[in-house]
Amino acid sequence: MEGQVDVEQAHTSRVVKVDSLATWDLSITQATNLGSPIVVHFTASWCMPSVAMNPLFEELASSYPDVLFLAVDVDEVKEVATRLDIKAMPTFLVMKEGKQVDKVVGANPEEIRKKIDGHVQSIRMYVA
Image 1 (cartoon, rainbow, N blue to C red):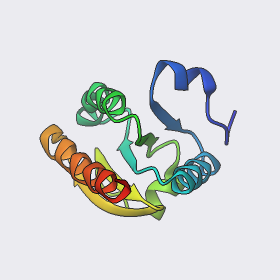
Image 2: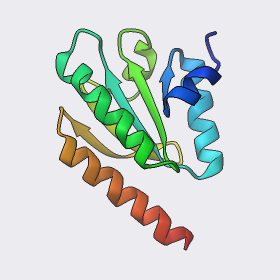
Image 3: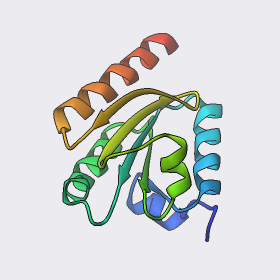
């Protein structure tokens, strides 16, 4: 199912698991076309702080319905991590119009929430 968004996953989770470079490109293009901000969690199954952040990321995805949340396992989709120069896990990126606008390195829930809030508020003010 490489390159496609898992429809069943979308109903149970608002976080889209990126399983290929094609899925990444498609997700970024769709969100950009819709004017939707994107939050990306770069993770690895062997990194306990990354794994520990998964429930928070799910909660954030439920709290921000107008934002696309992507999860990228750096070992499964190395091309994406390399393209965005991801060096540590967990790393969280906030993106707008396909470009990185903010970054949080490390498991820092308050900082991640603050960055998302700041960018979502600026979009809401721009649209209003």
